[in-house]
Length: 185
Image 1 (tube, rainbow, N blue to C red):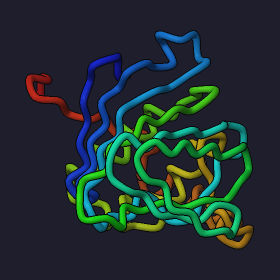
Image 2 (spheres, one colour):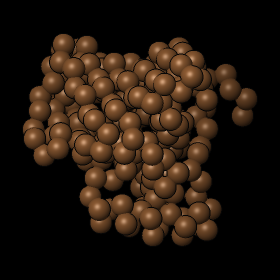
Image 3 (spheres, rainbow, N blue to C red):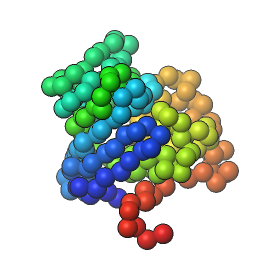
Image 4 (cartoon, one colour):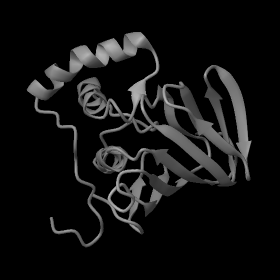
């Protein structure tokens, strides 16, 4: 479980997270982190957070996106708030690294979800978008973290529901620890 100051990196996305406040430190109320995204990188295809509000402020750079079907451009100083259940997608369409401060309320298991997806990226098991290459792995993760994130389309959610038990039976797990420099192997 991460704590304030911990850094995780996703080589597939060229993304880096520096945790500022975690669920453990805020009694589960908030997860806040600096998020750095390299140019021309998709953060995540269209998805939603069923029970969380996601808020981010662009500190530098630019993020393009779609929120509830409407296109958006967010530049330095822009604050975006995605209410629970709102489909959205964001990407860095700019020529420089984007720096965001991201908040999730309540925190739930979002930090563990990020650690898991970044750990899979370290192992080369994700696409450039950060999603697992294996759909069974993706389904197990979506099922475990269904309060934190969900596919935007109903048919995608149905597919994940059907595939998750198959993925578990094949040995895919919902949590993979992130290895930090100095961690015991």
